[in-house]
Image (tube, rainbow, N blue to C red; front, top):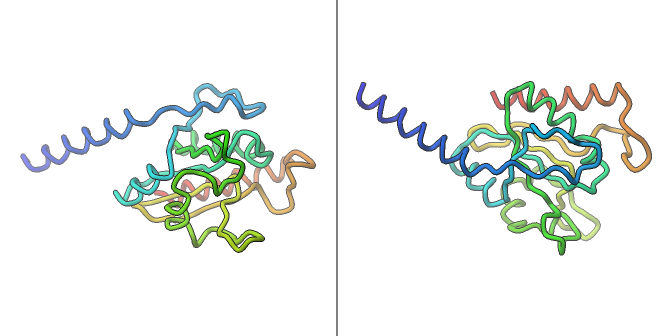
Amino acid sequence: MKKILSLLFCFLILSANACASQNKSDMSGYEGFDDKDHVFYDMSVKDVSDAMERKETFAVYFGFSKCPWCIAALPYLNEEAKAAGVKVGYVDTRKDPSWSSNIDIDDYDLFVEKFSDYLEYDDNGIKHLYTPHVFFVKNGETVFEHNGTVEGHDATERSLSQEEVQQLKDIYREGFEAMK
């Protein structure tokens, strides 16, 4: 019994520390997204890597506020995360104004190390992070991921149709289910 209480105490302390370090993300740059009670909290690539090394279960979204596909996807990711009761890490791939590409983010080599299997090669033969990209991690391993919105949708040309919205929500729901 003493050992169980000790483990429980350690778990509570670690959980409190993890929650204390989770700063709510500033999502105000996302056009049309005004949910002040959103699920997103700031993470860096190093934070993601460390969480994976600790065998944690979490979801992480890579994107930026001027990305048309990110703008289209964000409300539905937020909605499905709330329904699943999950907070989502947010790595802003344009956090530094000098970053003009997703591969400019800090620790990109570490990112590629963790997620290489889910990345496509760009025209220069470099494994490239295209956004929005959401990774669903269970016990430190990626169990599901989704890139973009839905097949056939071009966010620079049109909004998602109702059918596409449902398809995207189903994809995110599947990702959150995979984390259980």
